Amino acid sequence: MCYNVENLFDLEDDPEKDDEDFLPEGKMNWTKTRYNRKINQIGKVISRAGQWDWPAIVGLTEVESDLALKDLVSTSILRNQGYKYMITDSPDKRGVDVALLYLPEYFKPVRRNEFTVHFSTDPEKRSRNILYVSGQLPNGSLLHVMVCHLPSRREGARETAIFRRETAAVMRRMCDSLAKNDNDANILIMGDFNGNPQEAATTHELRAGLLLPKHAPEKIRSYPPQLYNLFGEHETANPSGSYVYKGRWTQLDQMIISESLLLKNGTMSYVPGSAHTMYEKFLLHFYDDGIRDPVPERTYTGPVYKGGYSDHLPIVADFLVMP
Image 1 (cartoon, rainbow, N blue to C red):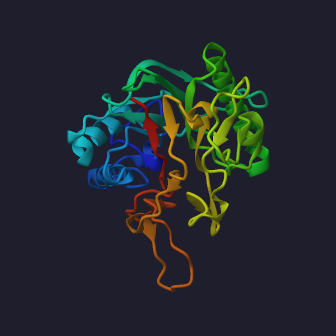
Image 2: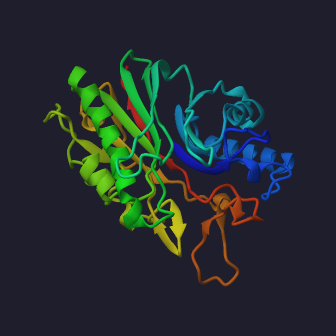
């Protein structure tokens, strides 16, 4: 599962971050009541994502701090499930990071790192770090997970494309390095790509295919191995995206996997057709006119508090771990 939770800020002032708006006395009037509501909402979404099972790993974007995650796993509906977490310490000016929640009985971290991206055209620019965690599965094999939040399009899609491409290029080099040591490496990349699956960052830099093979391969067919975007074929899905901008859905939130996770006899395999965007009523805002389609129920629209879950919808995919 992966979810952009829209500005999960804690209630404490961090002098090293631009978090003044999200304080009880700040512009957003981020009170303890609103904070607790947000924590419980995110917990509810995670609890509903796995239907009968709790998600083994959850990528989160737009989280401010370790404290916010501690409250999430200890005070929400997640409190009795045993979730652990890791979060980056990024130089992002907004003060938001990416994080990974995991259930240790299904995913036991053995290695962790984070990568800061340096931008060739703007050395002063700061963005979110890439979180990398390698974990042992119950069958003893490893799963390599990357959680990312690519630079925004706020200054223009074309003007900022280079930043997303350079971030994606870092992740591609990470994948190639992992495959150099183990060409069958199980790799899962997930996060907010701030662009649809067809954009250059994913198709050119990451070289992630948009169409999954019709038949499960029996062995890795190339080096470095092919990557596949699980949301590359979702243009006709309902909804055709995880985020709405100016009335149009876009699939900003994506999962990309290595070919090894499609193998017929792999140690872990993707369940075909399981990748989807959670389009649940409780996550949506319904317009009174009955004409416009529902959209994600945001926490804020500008400075106006709406009390919703997030401006993004979560994405989910199922995998089988072989005994």
